[in-house]
Image (tube, rainbow, N blue to C red; front, side):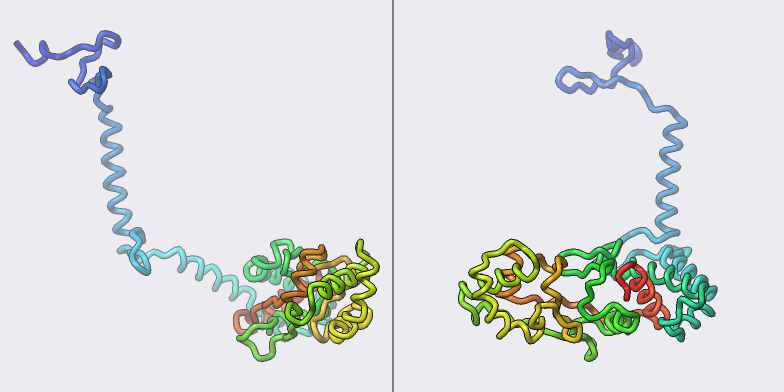
Length: 290
């Protein structure tokens, strides 16, 4: 009897089976098309050749370089260098420009704003947001509420040196006192109610009156007798509706008890002179520049 006579034929499809059976389910003997198999073999050969020729396999600290030495990083670096060379002349003009008179040179002003937007998105948007509206603890750069001043000179200084960092000795610096161990719980509540009063929020008038003297004796040195703050000290205005860390009861209580200490890194060593002036011009024109 021939092997063909020993084949088991599936009753439903009329196709012979391979003899494999899983819980009554039999595998049909349907070989893959030749063209598909050769295509599959070709992809295997192509994949092996590609992984040898190009960077592919991850190692401990890098990846295999590939015989052709191709690098996407090198391509990007070449593109960056090409554009830097193309913009070298106008970048040099911007580096030496007086930002106060930048608007008089329309071409240079457009370049500064465009280049500054790119610098901002690459380096500043992580904290201030892609639209520069900020987050809790990160200032909104669209309004006119500036802790250290919003003219060209002050914006540039802040970008160049940062705030309360340990990298640049010229960084802007101020430190709020934490009153958790200085004020009693009642005194904390009284100061909070006074701050809510001067900022036009709902408050307990009796407690706010008791907090007046506490504020004048402890807080006015930085925030002023009227609570409108001081840009020389980076002390925020407490009378408006703009809050860096929140103006609700819980947020104000935490601020009074434990203080706030936001840090901004210096960019003077990270960015070129042209980039610093470009991002200064960009931030200034967002809407809150003075």
